[in-house]
Image: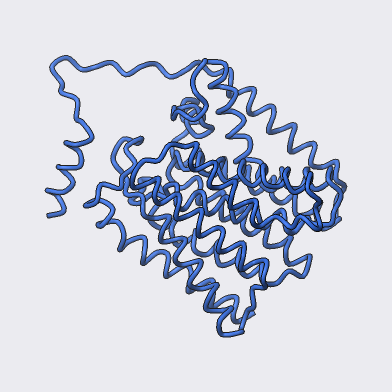
Length: 346
């Protein structure tokens, strides 16, 4: 108990400190997210990864909280995915390379002896889906971190119910690290999660959820896994449907995520994040209760029904109107933005 509190506190403070320290190097190196109204440094994800790994590894090395072989393999694979995401943040890798790399890492952590080959392949696909979905959630300030914290606590509760103590420790440390990161990522964000942090978070959460459901029947497990990641999955489904209907490439960025559409309904950036965070909490709670056997598996159908109604309802919103150019105004290029930031930071 005391170690859990100390580990969570250390991860929170370390992530908050690293996120603050890495902002300036990210600006000077041009590692920025230019999708938003202002460029946001993208090394906050590296702070989450470093804090999570450092605290979890310290507990395992000292013997205070052993992770176990499976959890160590999961963490190593997660670091590999994070490194690939960091390369993507720095050199703007195409999305398909991130997807393939995440799939290779997922194939290394699935317990095929327990799931069988067909079930293992389904698990690999699910892990990749959730990791990419969490990357999509990073479109709004505070959203990916908030949903990540809620999901980490939920999956950690499932792991504790299965007496998977090492996995529960890792998830609690991840939740604390994301909380420390959120101190700098709440609107207006001063640092972003980037592909490094979002892929790492989604990968670890999805892989951990698969491990907690190993040995259970396929259909109930699919329901629990969906409930634990309902907001991320709904966002990904909405994006896929919107882009297919519009005839646009699936991997090309656009303002068609849940947060964007809630903003068009009149919510503030903070309000959209709070609404989606509350939705994630409700769905995760259902998933935990079904996993523990306190409520029936049919409760997951209510989560799926609500998610479907939300997706179809937001899908009917008209696309955003194109911004009108102001006569005589000059457009600021990415190179000019980077030059201005370098001058500002000396």
